[in-house]
Image 1 (cartoon, rainbow, N blue to C red):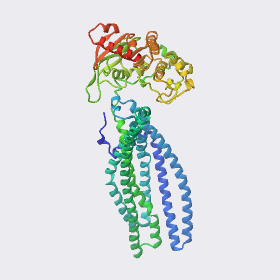
Image 2: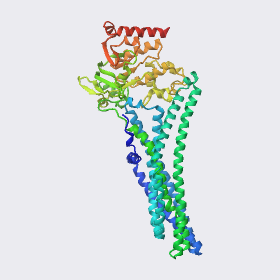
Image 3: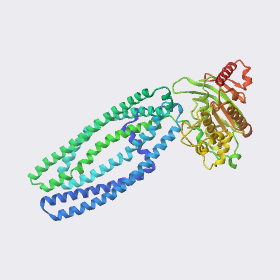
Length: 606
């Protein structure tokens, strides 16, 4: 469920960003302390200027010398404090950015798949990287700068009031006109920032697609088409960037008008005081030279507000993801949440395996669409191969994802059956040491070696264990044909390995974990007949010898025939349940479905 974007106000976003700083707020205390030091240094700088100007206009060498000594001391101190602040700011920004990005990645992993379907991969990547970074600037950079300017303004006003209170009050009153003018541009600037971020996300989406599909683009002769559409999206980004830049330049121009006007006001009011004998020329000259230390913080406050608007626009993009409806972990949990012991360990061998999975009256729908699954019930028992089959679009893969915990049923429950006949919600598998793996139809391959892809997240795994897993899924020979064997680098597209070989590597990754429950989506769809038969033998052996519960979605008759139980689905419902041969003798449409699958397979092999 998308969060209501009307709640994403600038101040609201900044407040939420502040809450995310958490344990790193000690860095803010250090930065505020350093800001106080900088403000005191600036006061010393003002006094140095005042003495130098006054000493020069009144020919007083003592003032010149003291001003020079103060100025040199100020330069040295400023270098030291600036180096310290730079170090603290860099560490603070790095830690808080990593914290927000980790929070976003964790949120994405715990978000309903149906909600993530509304977002493009390129857009999500942009939110995690670019938007998180720009949003954090609202606190890390702009917020600290705001605090520094406020502190500096307080110290500068105290100093200038000591020098000449009436003139200080007048220049502050004049400078405040600038924020009043620029704040009026705020809402328009925020709308432009939102449009810019949306157009940049659209550009990133298409860029991701271009990078992921070079073969399709070339084979269909779409290079010119793609180039034109990408150019159109870049043009939209340019137009919105220009609009934002114009508004920001208008704000900066107002700042320059304020600066020039302030100088004129100082000369006029100061000149009147000189004529009336309330101020000398040296004092007026010093005040004029150093006045920027008073007006600059006020002008910066308004400029920082524009920066805050930009950060808030990016913040709305990350909080939109964080505010997506999360999976109900009380009712269900994902595969990655399971606590596990290392495969082959004594601890793992002693743990009792679940006796199966019970699916009770499960229904599911995407957003406001009609139900894609309706009142699904069945039991997959321990040490048995359960196959889910049926025509394309009947909800098989959706059901498997619900069992895997990637989505949550709208109604019904999915529970683990234990040896004492008790039922446990799937989230209780965390404390029961149940290892469940889900192997999608499209093999997940990331940038890394073959061995790293098989191990993927496990620690303390030896090369021999990796080899055993690969041999088990008949991937070893294909791996050894690669240039560097298990050290061969793979890319998300797989590189030189075929789809069937990558699928077997994905299965080796699952088998390495010695799972209690295996969920397979079309596990032999990319295999030739020989490897299809070998994998079918593997599934039968794993269920019989190791007591593993396997639930597989498939159209393949060779696997359906070997199943201990076949769940036949049509239009989101379970039409019938039984063995393959039992279903063939019933008036349920299964026989005609199998005949169509058999004819399709024969056509593929011709």
